[in-house]
Image 1 (tube, rainbow, N blue to C red):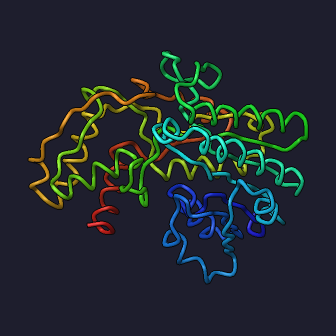
Image 2 (cartoon, rainbow, N blue to C red; image 1 turned 120 degrees about the vertical axis):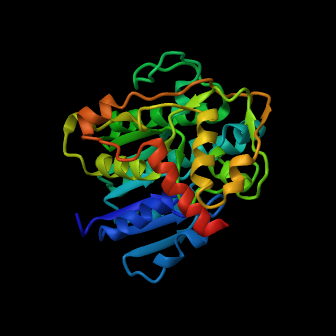
Length: 324
C-alpha cells in the first residue's frame, strides 16, 4: 500500500487533518483538498515540505477542482462538508450546495478518474426521529434538519453510483467525534472543545436542556481506525454499504461535564468549582444516540481502542498544551 495515493477532502479540518497525519506517517502519498472555510492551514502546515504531501486549495462545489485533486488517486476519503445542525437550519441552501452538490462533484470526479474506493463521512443524524436504540444501520427514521437530509442524500447517491457505475463506496456514519484540533471557537463549535475552553477560562458552560440527553461520543483515533479499515478491506461483503462509526456506549451531558471537570482539575483545581448553566433544548436535536457497532466488527474487524473517558483524557491533555 506504500505507493498508493489518497485524496482527503476537507484535509485541513479537524477529522481530515488527523487523517492526513496518520496516512503520511504510514508512508502513503496524500493529497489534501480544502477551501479553508472551516479548516485551518496550521493543521497541515508541518506537511507542506513533505514531497509525499500535496495541498490543493479548492472547493468541492467546483467540479474542476475535484477533477484536479483526484488525478492519480487510488482512494478518496471524503470529509469535506458543512457540519452543524444549527448552521443548516439557519442557512439550508449553503449546506445543500456543499454537502449534496459538492458530494456529487466528488463522486463524478472519482468515477471518471478510476478511483478504486470512495470512503465518505456520513452522519448519525441520518437516524432522525427513529427512537430505537441502539442505532442499527438499516433502521432509520425521518431526518430532523437540513443537515441530516444532505447526509442521507449522500448515502443514496453513493449507493446509486456503486450499482450504476461500479465504483466501490463505503459510508461512515460518524457519532459525535471529538479530539485534538477540534475547533472550540465560533457559533457552531462542538460541545466538548467549547466546554473545555469555557472551563479553562472559569466560565460556566451552558447545557441545552436538563443534561440527560445522551450521545455516543467517539474519539478521533477510533474514527481514523475505521477509515483505514474501510479503505483497505478486501472483504467483498464489506463494501458498498454504510457503518456506524462510534464506540458503542452513550454518555449523558451531565456525565460528560463530570469527566471534563475531573480531567481538567488535574491542571487547575479551581475548575472543579465552576458551575453549569442549563438552557432550553436545541431545535433539531434528538434526545439520545447510541450506535450498534456489530456490523463494523463483523465485516471490517473494527475494535475501537478508546472509550469516552480514555479519549477525553487525551483530548484534555492536548487542549491544555495547545490552547491554554
